[in-house]
Image 1 (cartoon, helix red, strand yellow):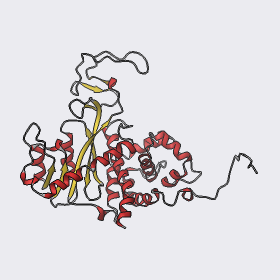
Image 2 (cartoon, one colour):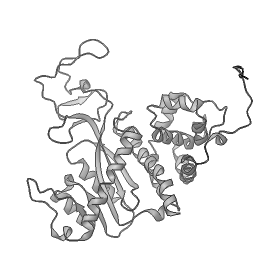
Image 3 (tube, helix red, strand yellow):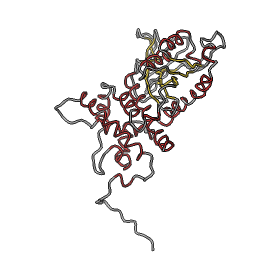
Image 4 (cartoon, one colour):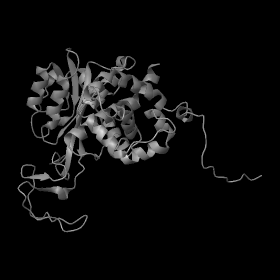
Length: 360
């Protein structure tokens, strides 16, 4: 007998959103780790919110929603709010009931920006790694560092002379702009839509783009990110960020740091040795003498570090493709850096269920 296609306008349900999540879904193992880290951040949340006034979006729910945005490659906060309206698994992870109203996207964005003041993204990354279940999986001796380009949300047409000269684009929503014969560089030009973005190219022969530089330090045992930062795109930014992140690492024992040829400079190697760091840097002996000599290359650990260092490309690959950080959706170094660091925490959370299963 054929069933009737009857439409039901309203329906009472006694199911919770959790009952609709598959028992073996990875989010079931990720959510307890997230909740434990957010609980340890409770004092930090208290410090950045006023004691009186209208209640804001709970910061715990806001951060869970932003993690979902990274986990599932949701393109924008507006689409994230749409997903929360009908996706029961998203509601369960964030902590919303079946009939809870969804936040206005503008309110959500303004509440997100408030968390920039407390550097919550960096502290979230640290608290995730501080979980008693995760901490034994981390190496405290062997690390790798690398940087990557994060394209800015700014058109090349917005890269105009700082003194206001130059021909404007032709009328229209996407007017043409003639760059022929115009010399453009970061000293004389800046983007009108994202002044923090800088013109940068990855290598000779590659196109120059408006971008930022993202940097991560990865521990080599489990391949988890232990530090992340974002800086303006300059020729020395990778090495300067590496020094700052290594200095901030916990512990005072000697460590090793794997890196690619871009870090093979005399100043960087000297700075690493001053910090009691053994620089396992790939030798750049193409056109000049390498700063890495036999004191480092003779040890078997040097070759091991170079092999482990390539795993950091998996980190950037996930952050750029799965989490959508190839071209940032935000403007300004502070906002982009905040989201970059939170995306690094999301990468760790994605890897942790697999690591915990292997350790069991």
